[in-house]
Amino acid sequence: MSAVSETIVREYFEQHAFLVRQQRKYIAQAKHEDDDIDFFVLNPRPQKPPGELPFVLTSADLAAIERAIVVVKGWHTETFSSARLASTPEIFRFVGPKVFQQAARSFGENGAPLKILVVPALPHEIKARDESIALLRVRGVDAVIPFRTMLTDLVTQTETNRNYQKSDLLQTIRILKNYDFFREPQLELFKSKRRKR
Image (cartoon, rainbow, N blue to C red; front, side, top):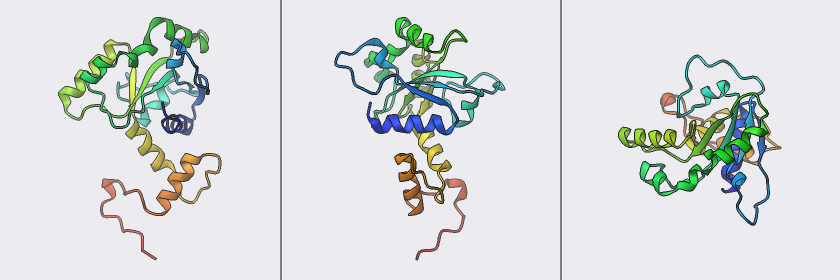
């Protein structure tokens, strides 16, 4: 996984007040089962969900998550279709009993953590999307968060008049927003544009 994808995921969860712990920062010479988990996230103040959490999570759903193991698949040119998922079984190593039990021990005995997969995209067509979600559920994944959701949230929450000195990612977003490199959301189509100097 690239460091950029990892940084996006860390910033996203931290922005939503999660405590984030990385499994390890070095790359092991020999791949072990526990290398498949990228982050442990803990919400110190979880809220009771109004109902069952959806499979495809949005930023609004995060408040109801108490603890989770997060695996990031930053293949940004890929769509996680059912064919892609079936041909890449290593995606699901983190939900295997041995890996998951070891991860669950990291949280103590207060309940099993959610298994969240961060994906570049799910198919747009409804039938193909439903097939992908069904396959992910059958293999043991509890929820997914698309990168688009994370990036949209980070861009929206980053303020141009604030200095994000401790975060290269947020500082870069701030600078790009300041120079109008991000389009306004569609709902603000008729908002007056910033005057050119």
